[in-house]
Length: 233
Ligand code: ZN
Image 1 (cartoon, rainbow, N blue to C red):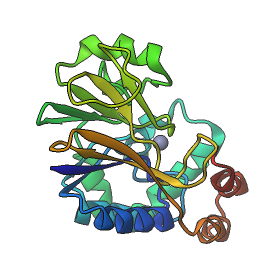
Image 2 (cartoon, rainbow, N blue to C red; image 1 turned 90 degrees about the vertical axis):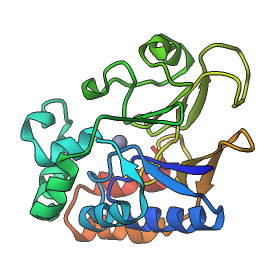
Image 3 (cartoon, rainbow, N blue to C red; image 1 turned 90 degrees about the horizontal axis):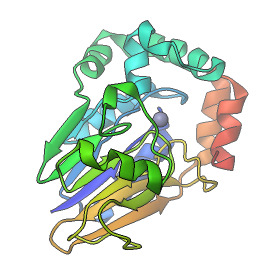
Image 4 (cartoon, helix red, strand yellow; image 1 turned 30 degrees about the vertical axis):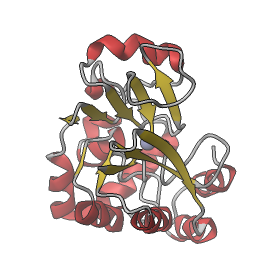
């Protein structure tokens, strides 16, 4: 089975469309989403619609939760806060209730999917590197845990020092961000796991970043949210 793992779309419709196109070309059997479908970008409703249409399932991200629950906005910085308030007004009851029923974790085929970290997905901890990943290893029993949240792609071995993915070891894998990459590369990031071939690839996909930036400005969202897209930060 070829599984495409998408995360942190952040209402960037141009990025999501380009990634779905690439996934089609890669002939994935299934798409799974690690959350943060909305927040920051200009097209929250359209992105929720596309994920509902194409993904087998999605887990809940902190920006999704904040969109329907003001208590979840406590730790948001002013930029994120302004964006999430605008987002909440855009969603409508139907999309908001769909987000509300998303689970914190999904497990299948010896794989775990969460937005933030396996220990306590609802606490929104960040896993930025190998050390933090290893501290999470004993909190899940599946072989691989896929995460998003930091917007920085990475493959972190838990029970070995192998430099890249292998089907005989345990890993935490960050799929990176579709709609707001922060590793200095503006192109969308997503993951492609092939359970038959035993491979994992991080794919980068160019999209119409200028259109996405223009829409953020046109909607009256903070200009910083447009600028950071092109810088990949
Ligand atoms: Zn995010």
